[in-house]
Length: 156
Image (cartoon, rainbow, N blue to C red; front, side, top):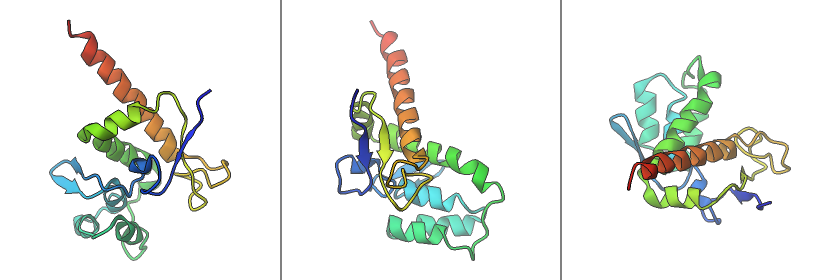
């Protein structure tokens, strides 16, 4: 049994998995400085709110702006947030070859965002959290592995 991979801070081993890691993603016609910028901006229907967050000069600032309830949250946010995160992660791990390789190099290890700050996206620090970010990374890893199998099987 492989040890689980735990990450949280961008400076840690596997810190590249953090949404704060400095890997821009392109979705639609826009480029977002980090997956955190994209995720936080998508909480809002207003294009001006989204653009303000996209222009935030750090992922921490984008996160704070995304938690600002003076902005009007999308009505469907609770049901949409996992798909928004999945979209951001797929963009991140398909647009940066070195990240794709890093994620695939984790084999079949469980991936855990280890933090007491979050028991939805992370493990809550004690393993009782949902670890949705880790679960989505495992899902993206499977998808990438499947795609490379399909691509490579067609080559002689």
